[in-house]
Length: 270
Image (cartoon, rainbow, N blue to C red; front, side):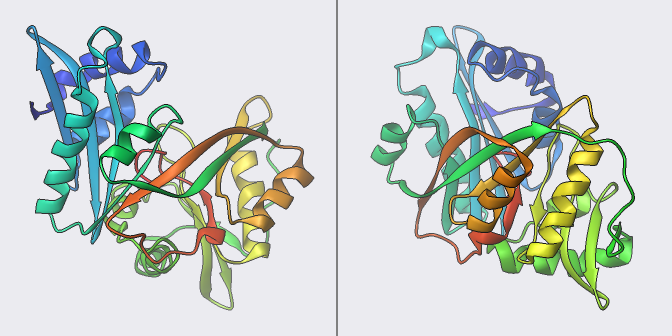
């Protein structure tokens, strides 16, 4: 095993496509180049046969996108990649680890000491024609970043300011008497975090996200299972649950507000 480089991205894309994760090139490239991410490649027979990524968000580390070429599965490579990434995150000061798993992957991660904390539910539905913005919505400005990062930290229990600052260009905020009550940050590979504890802000920001998707595309949202308000809103909008993924932790769950989660950077990054 070794550090993954930009030259390995095409091989990583190939592996992702083989395991049913096509079109991951942009996010793989971001992970390899971002200073708060760890990227690991496993080699065998002169080929890159597995990959795994980690992100350190203060005391919380995320492990994601661990995958192995089908012909090399069943040899413990995926578990070894997970532990290599976990060790790198521990060296960076992460005391708790989080990941999402397929149902097939749950027993593997349980053997590595992870337990299921909750589930993420992915919803999909139609985008919308451009419409007038809610009066409390506006573009995220550079001077908003400190407040956005603090809101995100309080809601997620993680320090994701490095991601927010790296991707801040197209963001939107919902304000109330000058206070930022929620935000949405579209990311280059689609989707993006949408964080707010405020139902009015959530309704405005999800509506915005649908208009950003456009009438000919599908809009997608990720909710924690505890977000009952969100599930009611998804039903009201006619969205259907498309996926359900276990959120697994090792080292104790972070203090977070799952009802404030409406969108993710990605299932492998939170």
